[in-house]
Image (tube, rainbow, N blue to C red; front, side):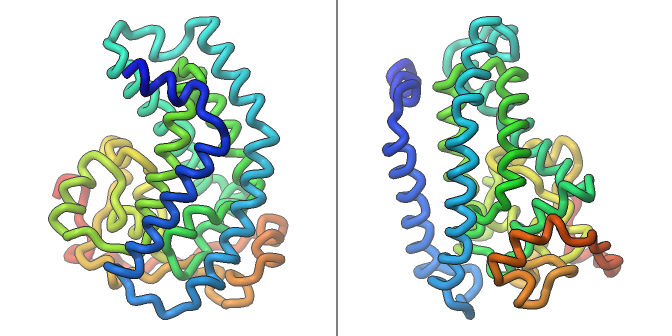
Length: 288
């Protein structure tokens, strides 16, 4: 465990980039071998569009990286946060730190973005993707990247996480985002069992349905336990019946043009359509 932490303590940015790029390649290949949906779109064109947002996210993240490092150093020097308050073996302390980071900087901010109208307009860009695949994990407005960075710093203080644990979390968070957005299928029984602990592809695809109430479920990124604990978990019997996108932006010129996507947060707010009745046989409650 010490060697694992030491590796992330001093991991070069180039290595982290290589790990994340490798994840994209692996899931891209799996999408071609065992797709959940047969691709009926131009995969490369779609990937290029989403890659534009990857570049803007990288600019924001690199610009704020020093604040993340300073937050971790300060939390460590002041000995505040869960990792300092609970006497636990190293492996458990690291796990708790990662779980707190996931709760605050992924699940909580994600929930807030869905509930606060002006923040939703930034997060909306991610949801407008009507072809959810591994590249959708890269599709975030730069304004949303600022929200995520702010909540990452908050999470660091709540967790009391040193920079090595932050890097561990960020690496696994990015890989899990690729995993649960990827257009590939696990055996249904395997996906269902795994979804009791981690966010799986079938679970997260529910979140990308184009209408409420399913849009407002399954906010998690790594651990599914937060959605089960706070009762925001939903499960559909047949994920192939899901329709991706957002009902307010289903026209191609609105969700498939970079200029419009960048401008959406500054356009008038659009109220989402009233959801149709949810058939009991289509959605299972968290205890099912």
